[in-house]
Structures are given as structure tokens and as C-alpha cells.
Image (cartoon, rainbow, N blue to C red; front, side, top):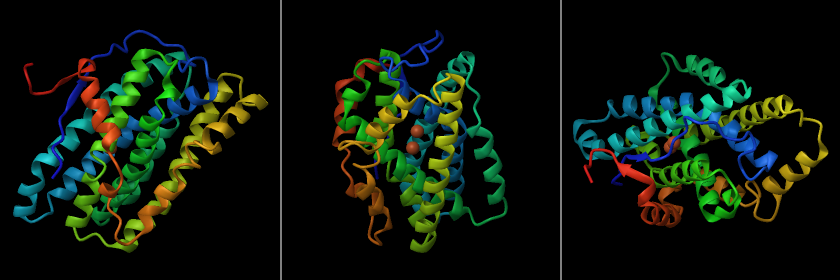
Length: 274
Ligand SMILES: [Fe+2]
Ligand SMILES: [Fe+2]
């Protein structure tokens, strides 16, 4: 069992930030801004599915996993709250959150369905976020020139995603979720995640009058497909999910633990007085 602390981030997002807050880099700022739009609704879905799924487990298993699940729910609830603050600023800048309603609409497809489907979707998305998190922690230079508040937000979120990467997966296994549905949901999640992210990012570029600037696509190609790019350097780790004996703990989380240890001045522990 992983012990998951809930941390309150000590940053103030009540004041505006620049739309291209990542050192003026339009592509990466747009990608992070678009991603942030998915978190309030998405992470509510993750924590609900894990909470509801775990209630179906036998009492002994529920007890064994209770503390980790409580930590997972606390972490995701904190993420969604702080990303809502970021999104409020993005809305003031003029972006429209198109992604959120799609997440809400798609959840209707799960009404009266086996709860394991929702947990499998969560486990698959958690694999994607854990890969993104590890990549970001491994390349802190990406946020070197960022607004310090947003650098802290993304590094903290990345660290906790990496830290709790196994929780939803373990709940799915404990619910006797099978391999076939696990990988079927990953294909579904990967397709919709990339499609939603692209549509949200294009909306931001349209709003910024950057949609037809060739330079943006050059920056994007390097960011995603360069030698250390987000997609090129994560493809094999993504494919690991399709191995029958895959478990998220097979992927390293030392960078996450290191960041959390080295940055205790940036957060307080919820439920602790010091
Ligand atoms: Fe999260
Ligand atoms: Fe997560």
C-alpha cells in the first residue's frame, strides 16, 4: 500500500498570469492551458470512480486499501480545486472550456454499466498522466522560464500523479477487472484524450490568432516528436500498459519523491499542524 499525503499548495492564483506564461512560449503554454481545462471534471470522475468501485470490494480489501484510497481522493480533489483557479484565469483571458462538457456528456454512457468500466477508464488515464508527469519531472527545463506559481503547480501535480499512479489500477484488479477490458479502455481513452486535447488547444490558438502561424507547428513538432519529445520519448512506456503482467509500480517514481522532498516550502500537509 502506498501512503499518500494530501498537500495544500502555497501559491496564489487569484491574480492574472500571462496567456503565454511559459516564458512566452506559445505552443507549450497552450498545451498546458488546454490540459488544465480537463482537470476539474476529469479528476472528479477519477475520484468518484475509485470511491464507488472500492465500495464493492470485500470488507477486508476495503480496509486494506482504505488509507491509500482516502489519500488518492484527497490528492485528486486538491488538484481539481487548484486547476479550477487556473481555469478561472484562463476564462478571463478569453478561452472557452469545450472539454469539460464532453467529459460530462461521455459519463452518461456509463450510467447503469459495470462500475469496473469507470475504474478501467480512470486507470488508463492515470497511466497517461503518470507518463506525462515523469517526463515533466525528468525535463524541468521545460518550465524554466515559467511564471513561478504555474511552475510550482505543474511540478506538484506531476509529483502526485506519479506518486499515486498505482491506486486506480489496484482497485481495478481488486474488483477482478480483466485484461481485455483494461486494454480496450486504454485504446478508447487514448483516442478521446488526444482528440479532446487537440480540439481544446486549437480553440486557444484560434482565440490568440495563432492558428495559422507556421512557427507554432514547428514548435509543436519539436515539443511532441523531438528526440526528448513528449510523444516520442513516452511511446514505449505507453505500450507497456498492453503487457499482460503490467503494473504501474514497474515505472520509476524517484523523481516525484525527490521533488516532494526538496520543495516542502511550497506546500503544507493537510491534517498536520506543522
Ligand atoms: Fe490529478
Ligand atoms: Fe491522478
